[in-house]
Image (cartoon, rainbow, N blue to C red; front, side):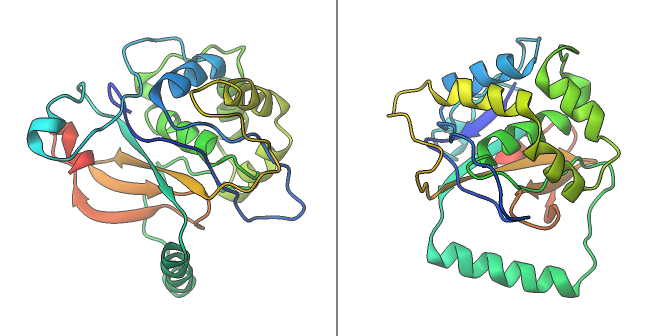
Length: 226
């Protein structure tokens, strides 16, 4: 998110917490849809928006509006990716997680909700930049879950009907065909954010935030994209 940055184009896949789990309609990963989703969730200010990143060369990054507060990455789930993820899980089980307690992290317990969860991560970890309508879904969800564990937040999301409604209303928009909530989708969203000048990857299918060895330098918001 730059003034939001988003790398894009498609939908989402399921997470794996408790069974059985509800399923939402998958979001289309294009900036127009995601910006409408921000309004649906209750984001009031207009100075941050999702845009598409068309490349990582310096001349292309120059077109990304400043500052960048989060990056959403959409990618296909392949067997190679799943193998890598299983390896990460094995490492995570043996190593204490290394991440700032200032991070708001939400596990994925709802099928097809990874797009929504990535958007929540992008806002929740930049709350000082956003004005939220206290009567809308996101402000209520964040206030209710702020002291919960990632797993408790995931369980709460399963029963948050206002969040589900905000998602499904927007999922019916976009350039591609509407995908049914029960249809298999193999695309996944993750979010990258800067917390205390450290780069974190927030993936609801992972047990905890992933800290990368990239330092975000003050005054260099594009470090999130490099």
